Image 1 (cartoon, rainbow, N blue to C red):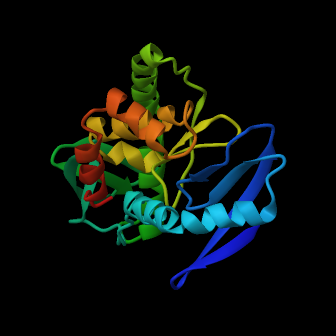
Image 2 (image 1 turned 120 degrees about the vertical axis):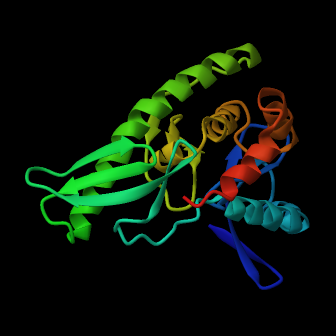
Length: 234
């Protein structure tokens, strides 16, 4: 791992050499920076190229910071507002015998638990409920989006759920697409935007001009949806 400084910011980057004629710099959602260089490229030449691109690199990293989920502190008590598929529900905690259960009866998201004041039990019940809904809902949307991108020569890889503190989704080096189960709280159009964004990475791993050109084709309204997702209180 190498590093350069841009203003007060330290920029770390890794270098991979391959049989190719051009040098490519990619910034990924976790803010990591990868340089793919020709086998005969010198360290000095690589460093010089990265130096010239530092402004662009830091701009890309700031963009990802705005793309991150914004966590809200939760008390897990009656009266809190919770999102599900883009709609607001008011949490109602009820004391009742038996195992903890969760039910959605608009405008309420009701949790029944043996001890009303047991916030850990309420959290555990809600986490399990959201996880199950995410497995169902995101699978359906992923299948639909996968069909839509076939026309652009994209074969969708496998999809898995993974809690991520700083990302809605990610195209993993292993070739899998990871989706944050918190996405089930967002409207369908925002879910689709994240999925389509990650599917575009199957063809273009970095966020270069070719990536955004493809994203614009598969999701023409992506800027509005990105803004909408960023401003949800999830």
